[in-house]
Length: 115
Image 1 (cartoon, helix red, strand yellow):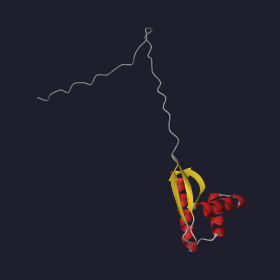
Image 2 (tube, helix red, strand yellow):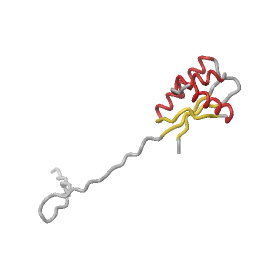
Image 3 (tube, helix red, strand yellow):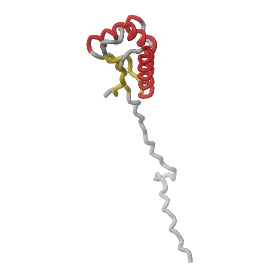
Image 4 (cartoon, one colour):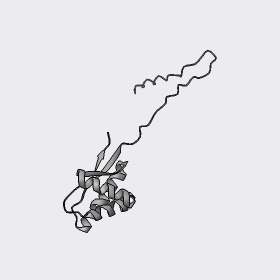
């Protein structure tokens, strides 16, 4: 003879004195996505003009901003090209590395999470 499984207990929502159902609203906050900064690293072989061109083409920098970032890369060893979500930052890095490889330059570009 098959045994019957006990039915699960159903908990009813709390009721106030008036017989109406009281529901508790839980607020959920979503965190903003982790942001990543895209950095270009200095080397002694990639022409400065190529770096400026990459900054203008892939990071939508005007000539003056691109030149300032290029000088920061040259003097400090690295420079921030922009801050993006993870997927966009990875795409930017791939675009820069692909353009550098096609042009025959050893330019390096990385994405780092922002704390």
